[in-house]
Image 1: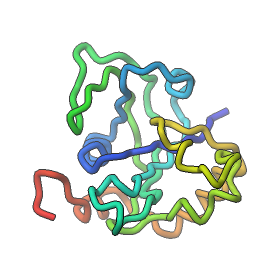
Image 2 (image 1 turned 90 degrees about the vertical axis):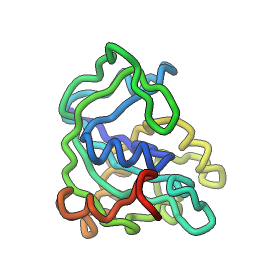
Image 3 (image 1 turned 180 degrees about the horizontal axis):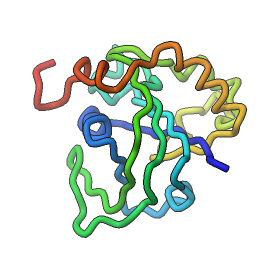
Amino acid sequence: MPQSYLVILGHRDAIGWVLREERMAFPSTPRAEVAALREGDRLFLYATRGAWLNPTRDRGRIIGLARVRSAVRSFDDPIEIAARPFVSGCDLAIEGLVPYPGGLELQPLVERLDAFPKPQAWSIYLRRVLLRLSDADADTLLAGVTPHLVPRCEALGTYRWASQDR
Protein backbone atom coordinates (compact mmCIF):
# COMPACT_ATOMS: atom_id res chain seq x y z
CA MET A 1 0.00 0.00 0.00
CA PRO A 2 1.43 3.41 -0.93
CA GLN A 3 2.67 5.65 1.88
CA SER A 4 2.54 9.43 2.15
CA TYR A 5 5.42 11.73 3.03
CA LEU A 6 6.08 15.40 3.52
CA VAL A 7 9.09 16.38 1.39
CA ILE A 8 10.94 19.22 3.12
CA LEU A 9 12.50 21.63 0.63
CA GLY A 10 14.60 24.31 2.30
CA HIS A 11 16.03 26.35 -0.57
CA ARG A 12 14.47 27.95 -3.64
CA ASP A 13 17.12 26.44 -5.92
CA ALA A 14 16.22 22.96 -4.65
CA ILE A 15 12.53 23.69 -5.17
CA GLY A 16 13.28 24.88 -8.68
CA TRP A 17 15.23 21.74 -9.50
CA VAL A 18 12.50 19.43 -8.16
CA LEU A 19 9.70 21.28 -9.96
CA ARG A 20 11.53 21.62 -13.29
CA GLU A 21 13.12 18.16 -13.39
CA GLU A 22 10.27 16.23 -11.74
CA ARG A 23 12.89 14.39 -9.74
CA MET A 24 13.85 14.20 -6.09
CA ALA A 25 17.44 14.06 -4.86
CA PHE A 26 18.73 12.86 -1.50
CA PRO A 27 21.93 13.61 0.45
CA SER A 28 24.34 10.89 1.54
CA THR A 29 23.07 10.84 5.13
CA PRO A 30 21.29 7.48 5.53
CA ARG A 31 17.60 7.89 6.35
CA ALA A 32 15.09 5.08 6.88
CA GLU A 33 12.40 7.11 5.12
CA VAL A 34 14.45 7.38 1.93
CA ALA A 35 15.19 3.64 1.97
CA ALA A 36 11.47 2.92 2.42
CA LEU A 37 10.32 5.16 -0.46
CA ARG A 38 8.52 3.18 -3.18
CA GLU A 39 6.97 3.79 -6.56
CA GLY A 40 3.43 5.09 -6.09
CA ASP A 41 4.08 6.78 -2.74
CA ARG A 42 2.46 10.22 -2.40
CA LEU A 43 4.64 13.25 -1.66
CA PHE A 44 3.43 16.56 -0.30
CA LEU A 45 6.00 19.16 -1.41
CA TYR A 46 6.69 21.56 1.46
CA ALA A 47 8.65 24.81 1.09
CA THR A 48 10.08 25.93 4.43
CA ARG A 49 9.66 29.52 5.55
CA GLY A 50 13.33 30.14 4.81
CA ALA A 51 13.26 28.54 1.35
CA TRP A 52 12.65 31.85 -0.43
CA LEU A 53 15.42 33.52 1.62
CA ASN A 54 13.04 35.79 3.51
CA PRO A 55 11.75 33.93 6.60
CA THR A 56 10.22 37.07 8.12
CA ARG A 57 7.96 37.47 5.07
CA ASP A 58 7.30 33.87 4.05
CA ARG A 59 5.44 31.04 5.74
CA GLY A 60 6.15 27.32 5.43
CA ARG A 61 3.65 25.97 2.93
CA ILE A 62 2.71 22.83 1.06
CA ILE A 63 3.11 23.88 -2.55
CA GLY A 64 2.51 20.70 -4.50
CA LEU A 65 1.55 17.08 -4.71
CA ALA A 66 3.58 14.37 -6.45
CA ARG A 67 3.85 10.60 -6.83
CA VAL A 68 7.08 8.62 -6.84
CA ARG A 69 7.60 7.18 -10.34
CA SER A 70 10.76 5.14 -9.81
CA ALA A 71 12.79 3.46 -7.12
CA VAL A 72 15.47 5.52 -5.37
CA ARG A 73 18.80 4.81 -7.04
CA SER A 74 22.36 6.05 -6.59
CA PHE A 75 23.68 8.61 -9.06
CA ASP A 76 26.86 7.73 -10.97
CA ASP A 77 28.26 11.07 -9.81
CA PRO A 78 26.80 13.26 -7.06
CA ILE A 79 24.85 16.27 -8.26
CA GLU A 80 25.00 19.67 -6.61
CA ILE A 81 21.85 21.63 -5.83
CA ALA A 82 21.93 24.84 -3.78
CA ALA A 83 25.63 24.18 -3.03
CA ARG A 84 24.90 20.76 -1.47
CA PRO A 85 25.84 17.35 -2.86
CA PHE A 86 23.14 14.74 -3.49
CA VAL A 87 23.98 11.10 -4.15
CA SER A 88 20.69 9.42 -4.98
CA GLY A 89 17.24 10.20 -6.26
CA CYS A 90 14.02 9.13 -7.90
CA ASP A 91 11.65 10.30 -10.61
CA LEU A 92 8.42 12.09 -9.72
CA ALA A 93 5.10 12.79 -11.37
CA ILE A 94 3.94 16.18 -10.11
CA GLU A 95 0.17 15.89 -9.92
CA GLY A 96 -0.50 19.51 -9.03
CA LEU A 97 1.23 22.68 -7.97
CA VAL A 98 0.06 25.79 -6.14
CA PRO A 99 1.01 29.00 -7.96
CA TYR A 100 3.62 31.06 -6.09
CA PRO A 101 3.34 32.53 -3.45
CA GLY A 102 0.39 30.40 -2.36
CA GLY A 103 0.14 27.06 -0.65
CA LEU A 104 -1.30 25.39 2.39
CA GLU A 105 0.29 26.84 5.51
CA LEU A 106 1.44 23.96 7.71
CA GLN A 107 1.86 25.62 11.12
CA PRO A 108 -1.89 26.07 11.87
CA LEU A 109 -2.40 22.32 11.26
CA VAL A 110 0.42 20.82 13.36
CA GLU A 111 -1.68 20.25 16.49
CA ARG A 112 -4.03 18.06 14.42
CA LEU A 113 -1.30 16.01 12.71
CA ASP A 114 0.16 12.73 14.02
CA ALA A 115 3.53 13.56 12.43
CA PHE A 116 4.11 16.21 15.12
CA PRO A 117 3.69 14.47 18.51
CA LYS A 118 5.18 17.52 20.24
CA PRO A 119 3.42 20.40 18.45
CA GLN A 120 5.17 23.06 20.55
CA ALA A 121 8.46 21.91 18.95
CA TRP A 122 7.05 21.01 15.53
CA SER A 123 9.86 22.52 13.49
CA ILE A 124 12.36 19.96 14.84
CA TYR A 125 10.51 17.29 12.82
CA LEU A 126 11.31 19.21 9.63
CA ARG A 127 15.08 18.77 9.92
CA ARG A 128 15.08 15.89 7.46
CA VAL A 129 14.23 15.46 3.82
CA LEU A 130 11.18 13.18 4.28
CA LEU A 131 8.63 12.97 7.09
CA ARG A 132 6.27 9.99 6.98
CA LEU A 133 2.60 10.85 7.34
CA SER A 134 -0.22 8.76 8.75
CA ASP A 135 -3.24 8.13 6.53
CA ALA A 136 -5.21 10.64 8.63
CA ASP A 137 -2.47 13.27 8.20
CA ALA A 138 -2.40 12.67 4.45
CA ASP A 139 -6.18 13.05 4.26
CA THR A 140 -6.04 16.33 6.21
CA LEU A 141 -3.28 17.77 4.01
CA LEU A 142 -4.90 16.54 0.81
CA ALA A 143 -8.21 18.19 1.72
CA GLY A 144 -6.43 21.46 2.48
CA VAL A 145 -4.13 21.67 -0.55
CA THR A 146 -6.32 20.19 -3.31
CA PRO A 147 -8.48 23.31 -3.84
CA HIS A 148 -5.32 25.33 -4.57
CA LEU A 149 -3.63 22.91 -7.00
CA VAL A 150 -3.39 23.60 -10.71
CA PRO A 151 -1.51 21.64 -13.38
CA ARG A 152 2.27 21.94 -13.06
CA CYS A 153 2.57 23.62 -16.47
CA GLU A 154 0.23 26.43 -15.36
CA ALA A 155 1.99 27.18 -12.06
CA LEU A 156 5.65 26.61 -12.89
CA GLY A 157 6.11 30.05 -14.46
CA THR A 158 4.99 31.78 -11.24
CA TYR A 159 8.08 30.52 -9.38
CA ARG A 160 11.41 32.35 -9.45
CA TRP A 161 14.86 30.87 -8.85
CA ALA A 162 18.26 32.31 -7.94
CA SER A 163 19.09 32.86 -11.60
CA GLN A 164 16.12 35.22 -11.90
CA ASP A 165 15.57 38.62 -10.32
CA ARG A 166 13.21 38.58 -7.35
